[in-house]
Amino acid sequence: MPPRILEIRQGVLDKNDRLARELRIRFEAAGVLAVNLVSSPGAGKTALLEETLRRLQARGARVAAIVGDLATENDARRLARSGAPVRQIETGGLCHLEADLVGRRLEGWNLTDYDFLFIENVGNLVCPSDYDLGEAVRAVLLSVAEGEDKPLKYPPMFHSADVVILTKLDLAAAVEFDRDAALANVLSIAPHATLFETSARTGAGIDAWIDYLVTRHHGRLTRDA
Amino acid sequence: MPPRILEIRQGVLDKNDRLARELRIRFEAAGVLAVNLVSSPGAGKTALLEETLRRLQARGARVAAIVGDLATENDARRLARSGAPVRQIETGGLCHLEADLVGRRLEGWNLTDYDFLFIENVGNLVCPSDYDLGEAVRAVLLSVAEGEDKPLKYPPMFHSADVVILTKLDLAAAVEFDRDAALANVLSIAPHATLFETSARTGAGIDAWIDYLVTRHHGRLTRDA
Image (tube, rainbow over all chains, first blue to last red; front, side):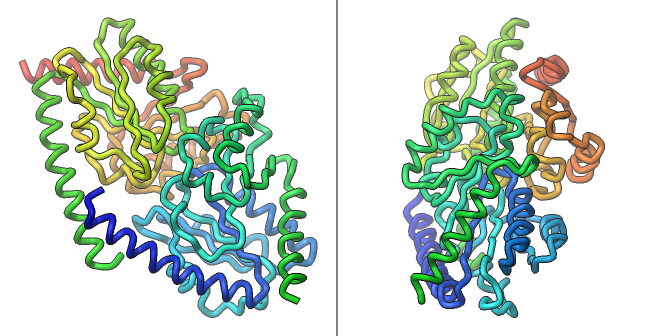
């Protein structure tokens, strides 16, 4: 990239980092665990989030969600069926969410009313990686249908993950998913990440993910107390 | 986006358009049909391209390919098994190919040696849409595993398609693919696009795509003659 563009890009990232830090302080102060869900288009973010909102509410947690897409309010409508408050961000041409967009979309919500805030990012394995949204947990989803090589081909995104969630395990046989190869690739790029293997359709592995979220939230409250 | 960034982005796009026009003139003059393949990560660009290179060569066509990824030379190695000349572009952080990158990677190739040049873009349903690479055909792939709604959620990319290729049809039953909904969504955003329904695994629909390419190439030669 030309130097002038690199410089301006750095300015955008610096501003985003500053706003993300402010969001993080607000989330921490309100006791809300913010989770940023990122993946390719069609890896199953919305399906996982539907199950996550349902199961967390069944355990008595208070949840809310913000969903990003270039266009349509489809995901917000779909997620609102869970009964949780859900807001859509339509980004236009932008291939990722930014802290500024999230902060503005939070207006009117009292964050202390919630235990968890989920932010479903735009479907993209590249653009969102550099944009901190103030989240406590960045979860990168990888569907078994995408191929085992994706962590190697999109290293910045997987490197930035706190959690990697394999999705659509129900399709593993149909796509001849090579689990060992996929796990080795995840480990090579994101050795620090916690891994879950899930299917929103069968429910496999979802409870382990919910347990993780509850433990993270509880740990936060305990630490803050 | 701030005005200064919009302005600089426009400058980048203007420069790309100029270089893409030069490439298009070179491709036309050499009688090579350039095809830009774009999709989400894991939609099956490389699998389709493997089959395409193999079948075109079996029909006596001379083919070459350039493949873009953030990292790794895996796809170039995989495609080189076809016997066709293949070159990799590693983009680093860049989420799309640009005409400049393609032009530089063509150095040393005599374009008149080829009938078809395939350019496999970085897996991304957003970034590549604005970047003309001088191609005659832009093919947007959509795997049945991604969900029927993707044309609505990523309209600029699908709107820019000359061809839309549904892939992984062998998984249609496993993912409960709603073909009617998918076709309606494709039609609503890309009514001008030619549609193919394929499976690289079973070979379904690939010959129709090959026929289309051969016809497009022949039409070009006839028109130029």
